[in-house]
Image 1: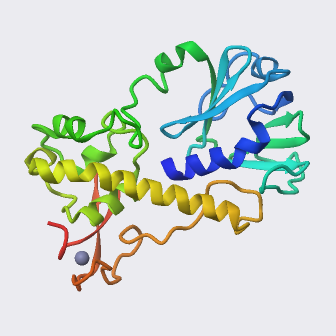
Image 2: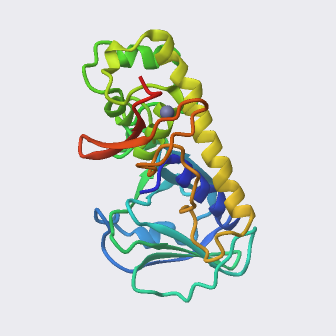
Length: 283
Ligand SMILES: [Zn+2]
């Protein structure tokens, strides 16, 4: 499942195809994905210019000059494919339509932007741009981890009195937006904090220290995603599914890379999700 850095990479890959460009035609090939599409979605998109392409948590937001915003969520397996006339660095000869091409945006610059989703856990909805913060998918999301509202005081206050494991707390989207299983494992490994520790029992300086680490881990992953676009490593036109060199996630049984540690990465299950960590250096 794509996490915040992957979604941000998809957004950046889509920018040259979509931002400032009119949607000439929208093909909506089925009534729903995870949820029904909004009424008359094709009509509400057709002829509208994308004035800005933004991101909030794991949602890509296309503001339209009709004062509405198209909300896009990739779900588990959603992919954005760019085809047609080449723009930017990213292009793919995607012979539309394919079986799982659920929505195709024909852009005035000659590109086609295709939302393809085999498992259909993705979503698209529309909202008045001014009301976006009250939209049911958006309204309960916590602060952006790379924004100013996410800071030491916020995290300390949210952890205070919490009896749940720190890993579970960090996965709570109301606490911080867009952090998922992979990057929480990476952050806790870098912080040297045992993912099973109760959030409310961790000393405040250690909690405060998580804020820059979360920012670093996400910023590095976004940079890696950006360079994967630049390198043309993803020549098949799929945005967002690049491989990182993770230090903890997916490395069960392999040596811990923390300098001087000598431990081994272990895997346990917490709240039904795999946790990868090192018993030696994460305390
Ligand atoms: Zn270690």
